[in-house]
Image 1 (cartoon, rainbow over the protein chains, first blue to last red):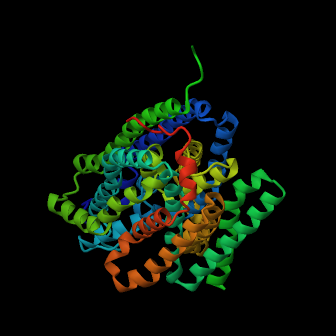
Image 2 (image 1 turned 30 degrees about the horizontal axis):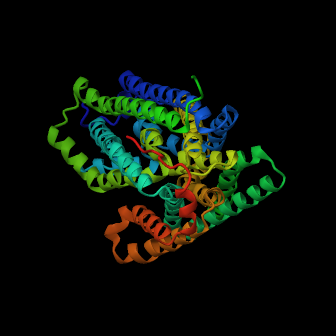
Image 3 (image 1 turned 120 degrees about the horizontal axis):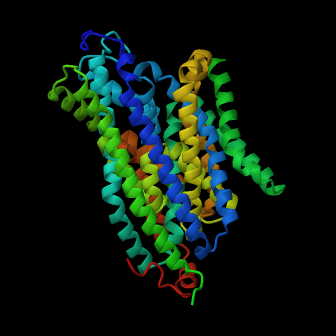
Length: 240
Length: 245
């Protein structure tokens, strides 16, 4: 079949080659995590943090990401028919999000006069869009590889000039980034405002209970619970 | 004498290992993710021209290249060197990895940006990375098409629309509790409202820089308007910290 007219995306998108690349990427992510865990455990003693605390940190991170991960899964499966499984795994599993990748693919398809999933969404358009998405996503990694050593040197210099910088800047940047990202959600619709308020309120209540009664596991699961309640409420507001 | 390594030495070794292997693993992923479409194009016969590829890429880059440059710089002060190579490989930074790091720092009661805080963040991101990989392989890779057929359309629609605000509302609260910098929180809130509701509507072109501008404004305000009484306390004890690179 002519790739310029065939809309049978899956025969291309499910090719063993793409599966191998997707699995390789996931394998490298696991390898990196394993190396990092070992390095952190080796440094822990000297820095004055116990192995128990480090293991607790690993578990907390894993538990806290269950909610967000399941939410990402729900969004990712909606893209399966458009891109096939390995491409979705590679694009959502790596730097990028469902929104970014959908937008990128739409823009790329548009340059060929096609629309996402439309009758002109042919094998040819898919391959071009996939290429553009991968190359665009690569930019984040290239910039990180280039800039991180430079930024690290700058940070070292700053902390030598005034050690107080390192006690203020990371926390300030963290608060700023999340408040900015949250504020950007607010003008989108009043349901977005409700989602922010509900999930924030659930988190505040759960953290108050967890601190008062000293329930460790609740601090870990609070994020997942807040997301579920947030989506639950917005479901009824949106469809109700 | 074989004493336990000092904090400086331990941290230096950690930085050395993670920056070397971080760069290597990230480069490997970079190459693999580019090899996939390129091999597909070479091995299959799609009749695609170089011009089509270039045009499509440039159209996407016009929208996203600025973000690709701004985001790593914006997140560096939060993540630190080691976690940068994790975060910008795995992605999902604001909706998964950083929330995981904040939850863990809160759980273990360490301050973000401290050495203990950095190690805890890296461990938490490793935990999140494992869940990330397993959840995607299992629920998208293996059961994805089946899930798509059983999950009702309205549920997916709601998840698509409101996933981000539902995560962010909770994360902001957790960040406030964990970071404990009331002044910075006020500056961050003021800067966010100013940028989102005044600056961006007036000058839409700054949209891609929104988060970066808020981060920069908050850092500057927190720094110059800090409680300077703390400086002396911090500067006095042994501070040849990070003295050599």
